[in-house]
Every structure is written in structure tokens, then in C-alpha cells.
View: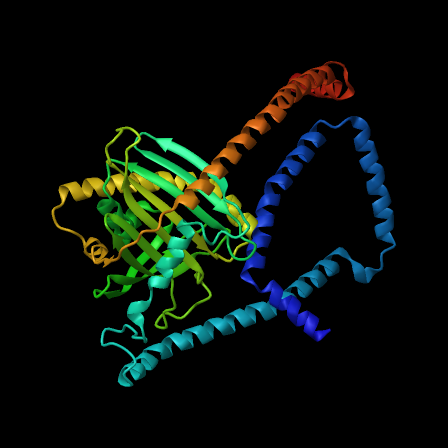
Length: 440
């Protein structure tokens, strides 16, 4: 019995369970609001016989309440419920206060620990922590993982699903989704920027300080470590999430490989001992977001490679249910892409007016030269199949359900008119409206 209770308490203390409960509550709020509005409207238009029924029920309830013993009065019952609620909440408040005090004590002790580590030779004079193989935070294995994803060699049995396709005057965007049996949902997108070079797009994606200006979700960005020998960096991010979900913390390493005029930018979550995990913001440990940047022919100018293509492969474990993440990404993706487009054009104008390069642009030029002969033909083929399947599903859905829904709307309108004219509900509504107007 005790082990079952401990497992239940541990399950309830998980952040994902609390966030899922909040999501369910948020979904239920509009429904309950509609129910309350319906009750208010229905009670205001009620017939007279319902008032007589209510009086009869209230009289019976009073008779039953007389026979209740004095010890179970309304006031005493309310006090008892309040006491039970306080007893159930008090242990949680005490435990949270204890954890908060312990965290403050650890924060006070951390400078002494860091100084002791520096004396032992385990740290740097500037406070950064050296760990063995720090310059290999992002390695060739991570590049190989990106190449296998681009070649569609790690797709497994699940297929890509068409998610979105949008166009603007100077940008084309397509997105797909794949849900593996294990692990988080994987996303792939292909963006084509008109009148852009791969070098400029590379610098734009690598500039975390400028991202703070155009990305409203990014609340904090700081470069923790830089390794000029191969251009690798370790970056600390804090992203703002909606009010029903706590903010998320990211510590990821990044590195760029160059093959001809094609750039492979790899970022993934890495451990960083100098910044231990905290309760808030919640740290995302499983994080992989990498892209390939190359020049392509412009859809507007045939035969000219004046456009830049960015193929992104992204997955992360944010600690929220897959269904909630799927809905959030689907609804917020196009808004994020439009902000990305406007941010890139602002960055392009800034680079045209300024002659000096920023520090992030200088770091982005410290690439590792490599020769890559692999192509993404299999991925292109599977993504085109996903597009065809999505188009066929949309067409079949329109053929099967479009005509029926039109007749449903027409039939509903006709039924409403008939009910309002001849039915009992219509008579009650009309009489109630006339009575209200006469009172006015």
C-alpha cells in the first residue's frame, strides 16, 4: 500500500502531469463558460411553471435540512472542509519552502565550490569550466547524424506527413512532420529566401544577440564558451512559453561544417557543469536542431542561383504531452515563420548599411572544411510523396464532406426558422421578448 502511494505521489509531482491538467482545464473553461451562459439565458427565458417547480423543490430541501443534526450545520461543515483542505495543502507548502531554502543555501555555497575547483585546477580564471574534450562538444558523429536524416536513412517505419505549405512575395516555406514510435516528434522544413546568399543566411541563424530583437519567444541568450580552433560554441537560451507552461532552458553546442558553398550547421543539447539544473526554468536536455544552407535556383528568375535554401531538421523533448505539442506547433508555426522572414530582412538591411562584422558573424566564419558527396535524394522523394498524399487527402475530404456540410447548414437554418415560427420554443422566445419590450 505504501509503495503504491509513493508511486502515485511521484506521478502527481511530475511537471508533465501538472501541465496536462492545466491544458485540460484551459480546454474546459470555454465549455463551462458556454454552459453558464446557456443557463443564464435559459433561466431568463424560462416559463412560469419552472418557478413553481423550483419553489416546491426548495420547500422539500428545507424540510430535509431541519432534520439534520446541529453538529452538521452549514457553517461547521464549511469550516471542516476548509480545515481538510489546509491539512492537504500544508505539507506541499512546507516541502516547497524547504526546497527553496535548500536551493538558496546551494547558491550561497556555489562560489566557494567554484573557487575550490579553480584551486584544484578544474576551472578557468574567468569562471568557465573546463571538461575533458570540451572542443569536441559537437563532433563528426553529429554531422553524420544530420546527413543520415537528410538522406532519410533513419526514418524507420514511419513516413513524413505534410504539415504546411505557404508562400510570400520573397519566401517559400514547406514543413513536414514524422512521429517515431519512440522519442519526440521530428520536424523538417524547407525555406527558400529570395535574393539571399548562403553566407548571409548562415550568419543570421548564428547570431543569438540579433535573434533577441525579432524572436519574441527568446527571453535570454548568452554565449558561454567559444573554441576558435574549430568555431564551436556553447550557448545558453531561455525561451518564453505560454502562461499555462513554464519557460524552458536550453544549453546547446553549435558547430558549422563547410563543403564547397554548402554549410551544415549542427546544434544539440550538451551538459554544462557550471550551470546545474533548476526547477524553473525547466531544462530541455534532448535537443537537436540542425540545418543545411545552400544556393539554389530562384523560382522567379529561371537559371539564376539568386535564392538560398535552408533545410531544417528539428526535434526536442520539451516535457509536455505529444498531443499538446502537436497542436501548439501547428497553430504557432506560420506566425513564427513570418517573424523569421521579417527578422532576416531586417538583418539583411543592417548588414548592407554596416561595414563591420559582429562577433557572431566572425564566429560563424570559423567553419570546418569537409568534402561531402552525399545527397538528399531519398528525403526529397519521401517529402514529395508526403505532399502528394496530403493533396489527395485534402481533395477527397472536400469531395466527401464539402457538399454535405453545405446542406447541413441550410437544413439547420430552415429548422431554426420553423421552430421559431411554430414550435413551443419559438413561442416562448417571442412572448418573452414581447414582454421585455412592454416593460421597457
